[in-house]
Image 1 (tube, one colour):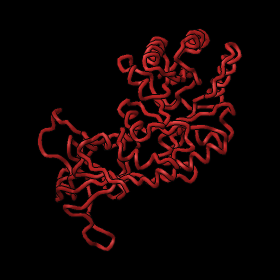
Image 2 (tube, helix red, strand yellow):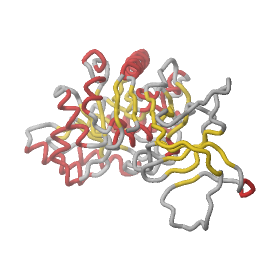
Image 3 (cartoon, rainbow, N blue to C red):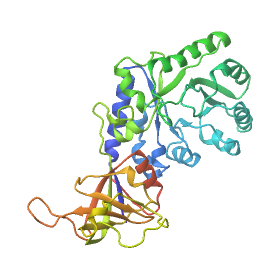
Image 4 (cartoon, rainbow, N blue to C red):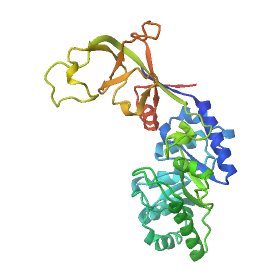
Length: 365
């Protein structure tokens, strides 16, 4: 089978570097592991005591993953990073020490579940700042907090926002400053301490060095930078982080000289995706290979071949066709044959999908 290789030491290096960087700037952070899809072997190899000692908490968006996090380390502080569904409220309280919330009805249910489990459940209330994803409306903030502060088994530990995830709204200084001002307003009105302003993510990391993050914004939820070494703000490497923790290897299962263009009547019955082709190249041929990965495993847009001479041709549910051109090395030798592997750098979503596929081997380096 095709294989995803994971350099766990590279990931650990990134986590330690981010911890050191944020500590220097007096910021806390949660490591967001949702890209790992709850892979317990991977979690065990990375979440070692000396690695997580400087991390506030570890978060995920799936309850099964939070359950695995608690299995790896029962003392780990866990955070559920999306508004909980009512049907899973008991499990949220059981496996998440903290959750992000936007619905008073949901928080009421969390309060009742926490009573039954004899716990105090901590929450961060998310505020809508323009991304139009999760978050309560700003004009309802005071009345919302007033109701939640009355609940006996809920502890409000802060407020947060989510920027850059859906529409790509940038976390500008002015946007993040709004959160800080809301915190001051709430603390003054209700005489309550809100220790966390959780408005940062991987996209915000480059802003810290530019003093473009308000001083009071003190909590970051980071996944991409820890695992891929990049910030989505400019899609570039952040500081000295390692960007080569993941390599995907697909096996060549067929290799032959074939026409550039398909031959026959083209219908709408295709189930895959193909690259564009030039209608003038009807008689032209090239070396094509088929590799053992398909749409059920990963989207081709989430893979970048390390060999720049390899071009995408098409992909179906379980196979992908590529163009190898002349299939020759610089000294004229044959480059690939059946059984050879093509190496790819997968994106964040690529890794997430590959780890979810039951048809992909995983190798920890």
